[in-house]
Image (cartoon, rainbow, N blue to C red; front, side, top):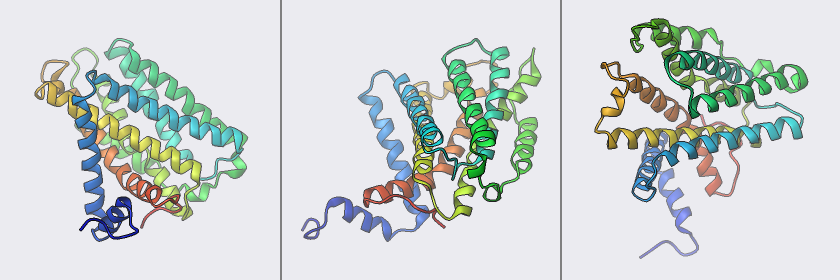
Length: 273
């Protein structure tokens, strides 16, 4: 019979989704997004484009944050602790990558990201500190840093010549995976989402989803051999893949509600319970 009179397909889809549980909807949307990205593999011949698209969206999110800080002159809604965690894993990863791998585009992007994050931290701490609400940024960093360090000691790639850097690299990967948690908790505590901050976090989530799609394509094309690119059975990339999955699914909840609100012609104004 088609859709009901006066209802667009989008409204019908939203109505159907509203009948499912939140967890089911998040899983469905995440799987659909991954399927769409992977399907693009057959259209886009250069799969490196997914990595470039992921980085481009991440940069766009950073520019949105800069626009908020420098134009609106406020850091309301932005978690300082998330920015500090980002700076921490970037410093550690840069130190380990310089020793373990040759400098490449990843190193250059990490350095650019680190400088951007340090600028954001400086703005929050010194230029816009009056608009930063410390009481809402409640996650204690030791509850994030210590478990990541312990996990890195237990599970890390073995490197014959530089064993300490295998630990540091793993630590940076684990820390990156959960670095966004303080930002999500901040928005929950604030009981509202500042529009520019919401766009920034959504950009982070979309970037990670594209990054995860790139991982899946590389694994598929190599028949699983992508995990062993460094040889010796170290499985360096398996750790990175798992961390990418964790971070993607941490942000999936936010991205789902952000897209749902956008489809309804609204802005996501508060974190879902």
